Amino acid sequence: MEVLLNSDELRVRSQGGHSGSKTLANEACKQLLLRMIAEGRTIQECGEALGRSRYTLFKWVREPWFRQKLKELNESMYHKLDQELKGRAETTAQRIQEVSDAALDKVLELMDSADSEVVQMRCAMDILDRDPDTSKTKKIEKTTKTLHLSAEFLHLVETSEREAGTTIDG
Image 1 (cartoon, rainbow, N blue to C red):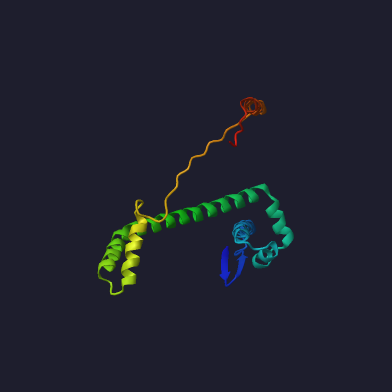
Image 2: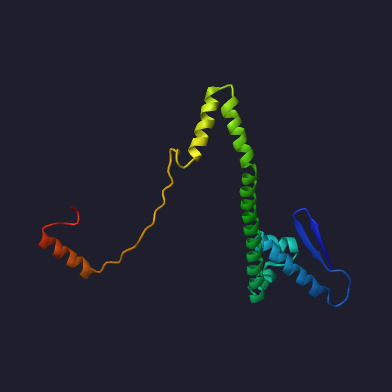
């Protein structure tokens, strides 16, 4: 059996006249069908590319093992993409960390020796903005707590306020 890739067309051709060639060709078609569906092709497009009828492909797609394989293939593709994105983020963070000392040295150099006072001032402001003690913006850390108050408790508070002549608002 031979799988031919010709531009955007996939064709499977059985070779030889021995008895398992059709079964092998069908198995190859099913594997290609899995890939093509995962790529987003329609059953019509797959049928034309594989030289099989839509009826045959729908029959294969309805089989539980086929759906399971498609699910596994999609999960595998998702996992690979997820890992690649995580690796890229880690690589980016690592690259930034590797060049941060050189970047700071350059900013300090420009702050001292740039011909433009505007450039010198911006370098100084940039450094000051990164220092938590001198930054224009402050990092705010907040913790929240959830209180669950019963209606009975709220009624007791209201009654106590009335008796004391005060309210929660003041």
